Every structure is written in structure tokens, then in C-alpha cells.
Image (cartoon, rainbow, N blue to C red; front, side):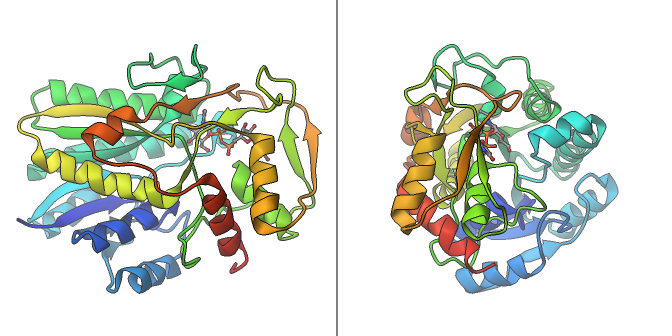
Length: 337
Ligand code: UD1
């Protein structure tokens, strides 16, 4: 059987780590990425870590005709991992149409090309944001999906719905909806990691840039939450563990008979507060971070972490790295930039 799989957004943060793990597992990824949120040299780094270059096409994933032409170029493709999307919550509030056009537009282009070419397997990059502010901090896949609080969150809910509707329409489709918690860290080799454009929105890149002197101070967004130390609790997962879950999800799809659409929580099962992350970062890397407590950030969920039992059981996957290792790897990567 062919091992070729399309990976949209394959030069991005999670995408690039996943491409490496796919190649190490014997798959042949075909990247679709126009580098709007990455750099072409990331492909060289992938090649360095995987021992060979992946196939790739620098096209806009919302361009239906170009996406279709890539799919047609490889008649032996068996599936798609769809990462390509914007992911900044605040920006999505400012530019909602840009988010729907890109995130939902690329999803439709991919599903249409899959139909046209008779490709059934899809791994979709979703988010725990679909759970909104949950009633209990620990969420399972059965926890209700709630009304989104940002256009970004709504694009993830919408894409999940589109996939389900396409399956229900009778188009042969085997899909996994991978709901990521908070991906952090970098490849242990420090050759691959996150490349935030501009001021980082996410906690860990902001921490590493502050430690590197690029930012003067980290602001902790509120310490008056109803949590043990008053700061938000999240489930921080090492990006390589997350990447490996995509390989497992792909292998799982290949074993399924008939159409299926299954959601999986990808997290460690353990929550960490913002202050715990800061102190863990300081300890593991032997440095002091300049931070101050500031006001809450609008739209932040108080606390959320995964119950990853379903993914562990059905995908035969488990996180291997600790948060401390992820914070060490994040800093090692930052030092190379
Ligand atoms: C959110 C979504 C996640 C989505 C991601 C995309 C939830 C629960 N999570 O992650 O699904 O994929 O956005 O970007 O909706 N913080 C600070 N100071 C900073 C930056 C962050 O204190 O400078 C705090 C935040 O208040 C939050 C935590 O750090 O408590 C993590 O923030 P961030 O890395 O932005 O991720 P989420 O908002 O959890």
C-alpha cells in the first residue's frame, strides 16, 4: 500500500514535528504550505531529522484548483492531515472574515479534493477550545461542545461539523478530530520548534522570548481565578508527543472499515497553572524570569485539562515527555534563534 499522505500546514509548528514523525514511521508526507507562517529552511531541518526531504508544494490551501492539482499529481495518496489554519484568538476577533476564509475555506478545499480523488482518510487539527468554559476542569470527548467565544474557536467547531456533515452525506470518509490542549516545547535536538511571528500570544514562546531579552517582561493574565494559586490552569503537552499522536491516528484510520468520525482529546491529563509553568521554566533552565501580575485577558477559560483515556486506549498512544522537558526543549530552541 502507498504511504503517501498530504500534510497541509506541514511547515508549521505542529505540522513540521508531525512530518518528521511520519517519515520516521515510514510514511511519505506531501506538504502543502505556502510558508506564510513558517520559513522554507524548516524543510531543511525536517530533512536533517528524518534523513530525507519530504515532498512539498508551496501553495495556498484555500485555492481549490491548486489543491486539487496537487492531489491529482499523486494518484496514490491515501489520506490527509489538515493543519493549515490561523490560530491567534485575539487576531480572529479583529479579523473574523480572514479566519473563516482561511480556516473554513481550506477545510472545504481539502474535503472537495478528497471527494474528487476518492480519498477517505482525514486527520483534522482541532482544539480543546471547542469545549469553551467547561463545567468541570477535566474534559472527556463527551463533554459538550459549547458556543465559541471567538471566531477562531468557531472555525474549529465549524470544521468539525463540516466533517461530520460530509460523512453523513454519504461521502466515504474516515476522520479523526484531534482536540489539542496546549502544545509547547520543541524537538529535543533543538533543530525544530515554534517560529512565532511578531509578539507571541501564547505563554511559552512569550516566556522564552522574555528569557532571551526580546521581551522585557511577561504579564501573567490574572491571579484572581478560582484555582489553587489564582492563575489559569491548562494541560501543556510536548509537541513531539502531539506529533506522534498524529501517526497513531493515521494508523488507526487505516484499520477502520466503513465511514467513521471520532474525536480524541490530546493532552497529558494533568493541569499546570501559569505560575507553575513560570517556576518550572526557571528551575529546569536555571534562570530568573521577569514577570508581573496583570489583569485578566478577555476570553480566557479558568481551567481546563484533558482526560486522554480514549486516545490512550483506542490509538495506543501516551505522552512520554514531562512539562519540565518541554520547557527545557523550548528554551534550547529559543537559544538557537
Ligand atoms: C487557547 C485555546 C487553545 C488554542 C490556542 C490558540 C483554550 C482553553 N485554549 O489557548 O485551544 O489552540 O488558544 O492560540 O481556549 N498567558 C499569560 N501571559 C501571556 C500569555 C498567556 O499569562 O503572555 C496565560 C493565559 O492567560 C492562559 C495561559 O497562559 O492562562 C495559556 O495561554 P495561551 O498559551 O495563549 O493558550 P490558551 O489561551 O490556553
